[in-house]
Amino acid sequence: MLETMSKKLRLGLMAVTTLAVTAILIYKLFLPYYLAELIMQDEPPSYIPEKYKIQLERIHKPMNKYAGQLFKVTDSLDLSLDLILEIIDSVNPDQVMDVYYKVENKHIENSEEVFNLIKENIEIKQIDISLYKKVFLSHATPAKINRILRYAETHDLIANLAPATAKRIAKQLVKKHYAQRNIQKESRTM
Image (cartoon, rainbow, N blue to C red; front, side, top):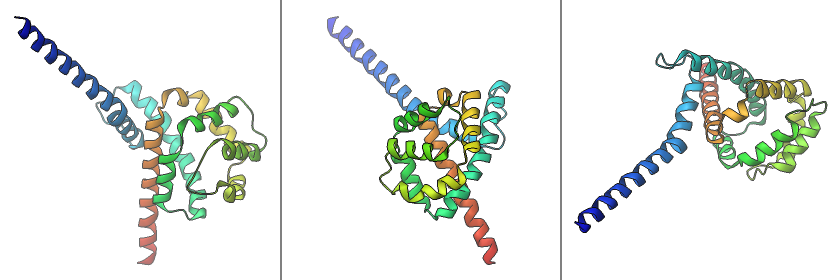
């Protein structure tokens, strides 16, 4: 009888452990990927409740707008897709959040301050960020920075967007942009 209870206990522990590992994998791997996919779609799937569709649209529209502006900068730098993806993977979300918390409630009047905060607080091993200061300053105007900060605050993006999801979205945006850019280049050469 004791042996039967021991087997049941072991099976129960194995089942609980399996469920816990599965839940962690879903939360850490599948969920960020799925959320990023939902945000990136032009139209949310019909099975998504209306209140979530509205939230997805609120994120999707400005994200595409700001991504378009960002890609004008990256295109001028002529960085490869692989390099940008590598940078996204390697950036520490805590460092990004540190910079965000330093500027979140401020009215930015000087883009150079923001650039210096980024340079001092975010480690990017793949490139020397100081080489891109001029490009940053020409594109990241105080007005644009303030607009992005207010949008993030208004929609509580920082609290609602997990780092894994944010990275996944960034990577998908980059891949989508580079695919579109390659299609445009091919159509020009035909």
